[in-house]
Image (cartoon, rainbow, N blue to C red; front, top):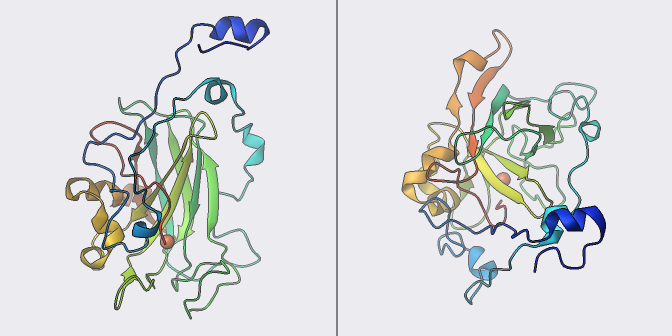
Length: 253
Ligand SMILES: [Fe+2]
């Protein structure tokens, strides 16, 4: 069936191609769609069994992210996107994107978004009465290199309240998004910082199966620390398999 109706050489090359299926791996890594303690999942979690739609030629031949030129010089340095430097603890956050076999995934768009050092997002929906930082937007992006590596310079985000329950605070975190080989292949997760006392009180972190939670916590990386300037953290992202990074169906707060 695949390849039907595709004219010319591309159609000939793809004739008989059976698109590889993509499915959510139920290996105890990813959070359930409905996590009662994470209240808003009750509203958006499906109430009926999922219907898996087979991927077809659209995913194989559809538009891809086109080109390094779309990523600007300062997109990966969140401390240099304004006239001055943002307040906060300066960080280098780096790592590699790997497939389930441990091979690097190059040329993947990695995007991050985060709160400022006071725990406030530059977003109209953020009502947390903490100050905005005129020198911090909190958005970054870069492409992975040939070895799957990425690197951001940023500041440590603050914890923030989120009204899920009494006295609910999110542990400091950075949101990550990765684009795959097609626009329908987008993966979203969150990176945390080691030793955060809020882990035990956070239903979003707690929705991830216990054995997989440590994969969401970056490692302090002295080798990536820049002397006299910034602390370093390492966060590798594994896309599939037993060691895969827990991923979200939608990003949370
Ligand atoms: Fe957040």
